[in-house]
Image (cartoon, rainbow, N blue to C red):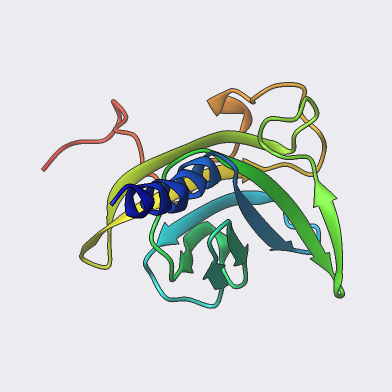
Length: 155
């Protein structure tokens, strides 16, 4: 019995340690700049695969409404961002690097095509950012509802 418990504990331990070191690799079309809205569990032009240690997304099509077939996996990740320029992968400084190219990263639930989906949004900049950009420095995210203005009238 003790040997069975040790085997079970030994099998469980790496899975716990592995979740803290998962890698999420996102591959963008060459020199893409703008909003990215990853809509999880929605088939689309993008390819995605999940292994024991990695989620890899190769994005294609309209990245402002980009369906990826995998479910959203919350938790700690090392994020690697890459441009695919004619088959050559070029690394982009990630979310937490000092000179990152990403601003305004957030995750939310929203209705897409009549179904609740998890959407991860962020802005990919052409140049390194010293810090996250303020909302008014970015174009509006096309997946966000338009804010109500005082000039509009409600029905």
